[in-house]
Amino acid sequence: MKIVVQVKLMPDAVQALALERTLHAVNEAANWVSAVAFDRGVPHVYELRKYTYAELKSRGLGAQAAQHVIKKVRDAYTTLKANLGAGNLGKPGSRRRLKAEAKPIVFRPEAAQPYDDRCLSWQYDAGTVSVWTVEGRVKNVRFVCSAGALKTLQAYRQGESDLVRRDGVFYLIATCEVPEAERFEPGRFIGVDLGIVAIATTSTGYQAAGRGLNRHRRRQLELRRKLQNKRTRSAKRLLKKRSRREKRHAANQNHIIAKTIVTEAERTSSGIALENLKGIRQRVRLRKPQRVALHSWAFAQLADFIAYKAKRAGVPVVFVDPAYTSQQCCECGHIDGRNRASQSVFCCRNCGVVAHADRNASRNIARKGEAVWIAGSESRVPATP
Image (cartoon, rainbow, N blue to C red; front, side):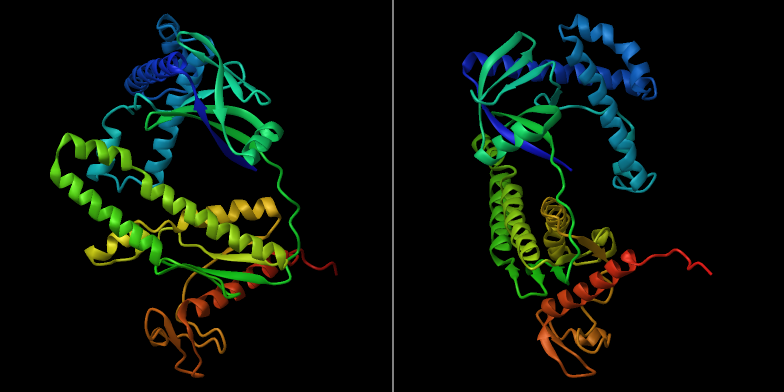
């Protein structure tokens, strides 16, 4: 399985200037290549190379850097086409979709630039890298990372690494091919109910409350409103400085929750059952004050974190249909919309069971997970007469 390891570069003033100029140069070249590709109907990489490679070389880019710029542009258009096909940019004829289709893709001056082993070499023991720039090869650029990340880099790094600058800091994002652990046969399944009030509730009793994260989101939203209303230079600088802070905080919380769930499943030799919530934002209709909470809900990220951590631990993961899991009684199986007495209370109209609503849903998810696993394990080959 592929994972990424991020290391922070610690260049001196001369090295930092060379890296900055390199990112600006390659992304300016990428914008020119993007305009050429747009005018020519986005040809394949080989054909696009014929139109642009010589010009990129004349701009001072090395051979490998020029190839990576062309490939980066073509990959960006492939991603755009996939998003259009999936309807992520709206329906045909919508304003957002027409805006995306009407002009070439534009790259930020400090957007990520891929490097392969010909342009970038790692010296793990010294904690340095040697990297190509428009001003020549820059050697002995220090990097820092955790001991675990360094061990992963040394053992599993493969393929390309991306150089990116965020908030004035340079990072290298390396791709690592980590072997998956052998998946064991689960004795049972742990159902995980995802939500906003409670981020995750498991059928074993663990519950990750969302009160702190929701309070943090509200505080960040109110602070952004105040700064945007000021419209001063200092307010804009502060907004830029604080950008992505909420996203990082939410990702950290999701990592902690995912690790807790996977560790419990590994310890008890259990599988994990998750709800397939894809498309829920398009299906659910809410009032305007509730939309912010729904669209800030990082359920997909949490599910991805659980899935990849489970793969590394050999824990089986299945996704189940979430239909009626909140309305069905986990004891008698009776389904009724009135069973959900409130956000947190479940009261069965048939057998009278009273339980926490999320805990009841998680037990239903666990049962569905077991059914999905058994159905997938059973042989579908007809018996020989």
